[in-house]
Image (cartoon, rainbow, N blue to C red; front, side):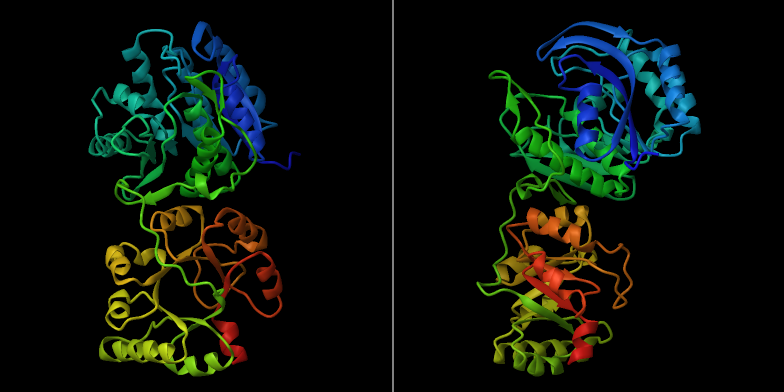
Length: 474
């Protein structure tokens, strides 16, 4: 039995190796997934031109699907180029029995500009409607979305409206790749499930024909889904994979380049930025926490702790108050800020950013649920430092768009201090965060005690936040 999770790609073969089945299988291998293929078309092509396409019969596509179902069942499947409307029925019959994740990337036009379907375009495009109810993620680019909806897409508003129409057609979620909408310096994709949405922004690179970017991006999402990642995390990881591939692409000539493939992406430069509106410009970085490390970072609920912590040479503290309101809350925050200033302690106020500004706190710490309710611009204008909690790739990318003073990563281990919606990340993932987020100060949190604190420090973090352990030992 295979140890690696299994992912399938149902797509066309690119004889030049830059896109299609060949690119998908490279991605699967690099990300640690066993890849299987169902080939829908054989192309004779070079980077700039397709000279011939042989469309595989519906019967043979069905035979490929059947051959692998019993011994190599997939956890996740990607559908790319289909080409001939006659094979849709075979695909649908498979999907009616399939229980895993499905990513549909409606490849219609080659990078060279040639059509990748056999007959009448209108007839071919209508066939996609029968696939939509099975799709977990639909990933058209702007041109493909225009063709499928028979409408023009010229702006970010148009992209949002188009995405909503695909949701109405039955897909669970849609990500429209907006790289072809050149409104600003960013390449911005739009994701929605009909209830929530976000923009995924990355830097633009020199205008070239980067072969197979859509295939590679959707294959990377599929691989991450097969590995068990949540969809929004899979999108961020896949974006890092394709951003790195484009950044390090190998040029064929002045106009064409092949995306570079490598193992797990770990470079901060490739991390996208996630926001609830299209990103207009790079966020200004929040002030740093100075030259001294954050160190041991107690989370307390009253100013009464500050004096004793200062005596133990603690330099950074977070005040998190959950059970006070009104004047009592404000007085607690005021006294905490005064005490921290007296002992030269860097005090971060959890959540109550307006009171933190009013009384001159050193900084504010926000959970992910607090970001939308906070005026980030006001915090910047006031000169406060900012820390943000993160638990996964999606939340890291969301915080990255704000450029905070530090990122808190957790839970590292199981914790009883608060109810957690995320599983423990473990030391290996913490080490990966330290390798990736090398321009941020990282604070580890969650289940850290005297028995495991040494290995957390060894991972390379700048600080360790503690709640229960501090109270037990103080």
